[in-house]
Image 1 (spheres, each protein chain N blue to C red):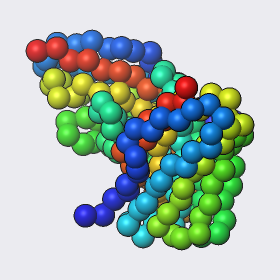
Image 2: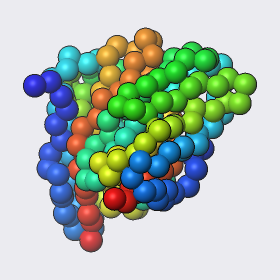
Image 3: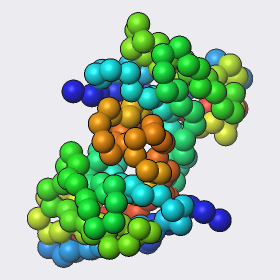
Length: 114
Length: 113
């Protein structure tokens, strides 16, 4: 089945540690995105990538980093510089830009930092 | 800039009631508009979309019409079911490179038997 997988579903970390969230897609989509969801605030864009080896900051990139070495994979690292890392993180992908394409979402990873 | 405003929830309805969730937007030009649904503990699923003015998106009994004159995209369903309980997000596709979405804050719908 084609789709987007995110792992793990739940992740717990101590404050001050970096943590990497996985996102893999087998939809052959060019573009991939990372969002953060906080209660009552909808989704906010962290980073996006339109093509392999290229990525751009979204609206709230501070404290996060990404890589796009393969078309299928777009991992997100939450660094210790992120002041409020506890949130629900959603990865998405879409076909090549410019065609008003919708985004397809993964099941999300809930990160708790204590 | 781009923004999406949704009515605040939660919206609580009895089964078979009529549903309206309001959504208005601010954007340059005529962006594509979307409704996504999120069931508890899951990611978002596309519910319906409209790409130009006066288009009506529909799916699973839900409908929304792209109203340019009122910059709105209200979600409606004639008869809700308990299984429709979820959070609904209105979103617009920004008119720039990257296919980036701007989301509203989400509206939680609770349907009681």
